[in-house]
Image 1 (tube, one colour):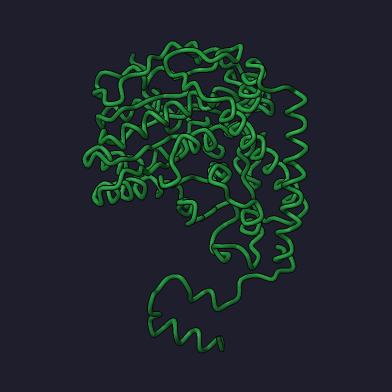
Image 2 (spheres, helix red, strand yellow; image 1 turned 90 degrees about the horizontal axis):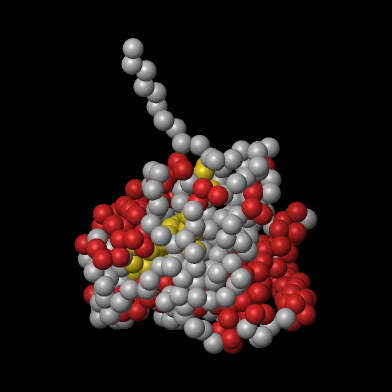
Length: 407
């Protein structure tokens, strides 16, 4: 008698109370993946979609053809930005616990994604981030006070209270507004890249979504348009293992996310998302290819979300409490720090000094931001801003509503 068929539903490998063990990942050694020519035919590098580009080995030494051989000053800049992001996150979470922020999302374990990839780009490249890439703003020099004013929604919030906290928008830094319905930024980035190409410009667009969002239609629409029109765009799926409480197995289909790009005939690369050097190198390669007319690149950033999805989430309900500590690719900040120490360019004393300096900077910035209003007591954006920034000439019904408010 044949066995009755049942629906297969993927599950997470480990649940609360179980001991996480990532031996089944079979991670390639650092330096094994070969860096191809910039204008390589995508069919010749299919293996990069299943491998893993790694530069820093287990002893924190740089190895292999993907090594970007960055100057110590650049590495120190990256370490500073990543350290600032972690301290900023911790302080903002504390403010949330004290009732001074309504909502927050941390980037623990993913600091290298925004910092390294952002540093590999030009200032005129257009950024379409998700909500775990706030570090892009550090790279482009945004004032911390401005970022905090947005998070506490006071009169200096540049989006005038129209977005959730940490859903940043920053025109001056070419950072397009983060979208609450995740996924829309992918086709938007492709459209922006197509416009740049149409105008004869050589800047690129870049976007990030999470592994869960890769199961949405926006992902396929974006990558299809990018392929058909050879748009100068870099599309990243940040595979941090968890989409809120849903494990990546639900959306991956059993293979790598990078493998999906093969069907669209675009270069598809899987990279260690906790390796600052590897991320920088792969992003630089993709950007140079796009500028030379080589079209899009699809990147799977392989990492792990260290803490809760947001302040509205309790990850201990769906995964082991200390699972991140078992992640075999380690802590991105620790790895870059140890790499610099090994080069003789940094020390533990230097790191301690840096952390104290940056912590003081964040505290000072928060106090400065509160001068423009607090979450609980305001002042907040005035009612008249409801009618601004949408229409050049307001339609009749909005003019009538504004008159009814007496403004």
